[in-house]
Image 1 (cartoon, rainbow, N blue to C red):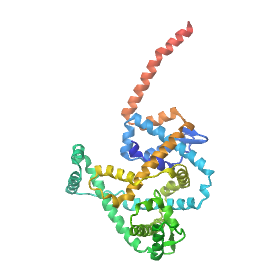
Image 2 (image 1 turned 90 degrees about the horizontal axis):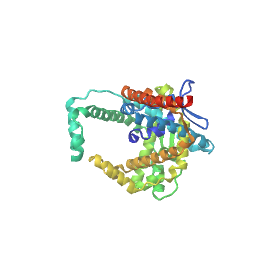
Image 3 (image 1 turned 60 degrees about the horizontal axis):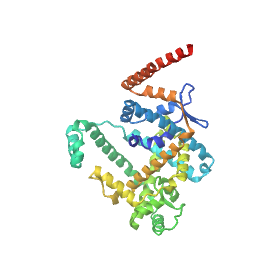
Image 4 (image 1 turned 90 degrees about the vertical axis):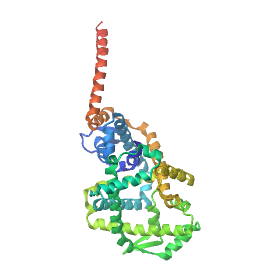
Length: 400
């Protein structure tokens, strides 16, 4: 369960505001922080259907989900309160991250509306052909448990549709890439300084799109999971450093154009965008605080990356060579380490949080399927019956 919900429960939780209605049941509280049922309702409704179905069919899983999520929401608000007094919110880094965070959400909203969620017809023979290709890529051990065609047909169809969507998106982006003016002279200077271990000039312009300029400082903020030292550990040749900075300069220019297109088409005014960005300040503040407090100790070695790559290769023989996807695998390893550290940090804060059992149980009952509800009712009746003789005995003893 942890793998499927994973980072969703850690970071997307920030996007959910606590309920404001008086009738909302109080699930958890801590130092003035209150987590209401509507907060969990929003999270639960946004889970993938397969996760919702699995939770609804298992009281134990649902119980863990509700308790842990309520505690994590409360912990996150506590972290935000602690971070308020650190001065992080007044930094230039914070302002830039908020700007890029809003840009990322706006682009995602635009791309989702324009390219995702399509339901296209895919011929049966094409699906079967892809099915055979997948089987041919598996080991004998994996083939033993691999489902029959009908069981995975829908998933294969979605993969094919996704590939087509990706191609359509690349076709859309291609003209935007041509509009990005890369500053070759500055990029060369930055690449040379980077390769020679010198400090980079954060104000140096690396590319332009119409009246907008993109600086080294923009690139550094956009790195996200990677730091400049991580990049330095990955590039093995000077040419690779040049490619990295050029690719970054182009991508940042494309993003500026996608952001403007999304604004021109009114996506920044939609209720969805406003809902997704209303807690962006808290998201960034908490992430900066966590980076300062716990992520600064992360040290992922090349051996860690190789180990993860070997694990991935066992399940996918057609995976690209490690030297081509080293940075993607490293980001994956860093994300796994970050997730574990955050979970440990949040768990340590649980002692400060009060969980309201009655409200938790009510929420669980409302979201499990009918079979599990019947099991809960049966358990409740059994408990009530087992307590009846005990109560009668106590009354008898009192009368004597």
